[in-house]
Image 1 (cartoon, rainbow, N blue to C red):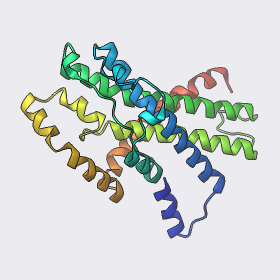
Image 2 (cartoon, rainbow, N blue to C red):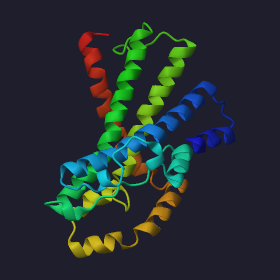
Image 3 (cartoon, rainbow, N blue to C red):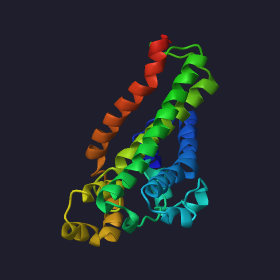
Image 4 (cartoon, one colour):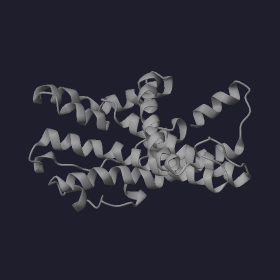
Length: 239
């Protein structure tokens, strides 16, 4: 996010301070509430599938101190994409380790998409309460309304970005756990052998923009789905 701001300054473009503040506050909310929610979703689903590790580790909590990761926080503030400390999961508790690990991994991105849907609904409520119309795509502008629309819009966008990012099939992201369900044990071992190194390479790829295209494809897909579902009740009411 701040990286985009710096690009705008370099190109000589103006900065909307209200929008910038809204994005920063949205990022703070994501760091201290949604990232813990993402990890809690992993732990909760793992528990339902028979693994109590997260529960006994004290990670079934919204407490951000249990989840905040320094590099993930910096990445979120810079690029709008970040991560928290992963919830411990022990696949030996699962009846079908590969399948249940994939389901557990999928829970995190689903949590982000749920949060993005809530943010999009709240944005639509602001539009309607301002005297505008979701159906017509208009709102009655004021300082508060404009700020809230920017804030909930940023919350929606960042959550969608996090869901798309975590679904990339690259260790240690959630997408790698989903892909592992389709790999042999030997291939899976080789796949994860160098995941610590891959994490730093991933950070570098984010910096130079190599992942922009695959992320954009996923983000556009998720954005269309979230917007459709969030708009649906307002369209039904004709507002």
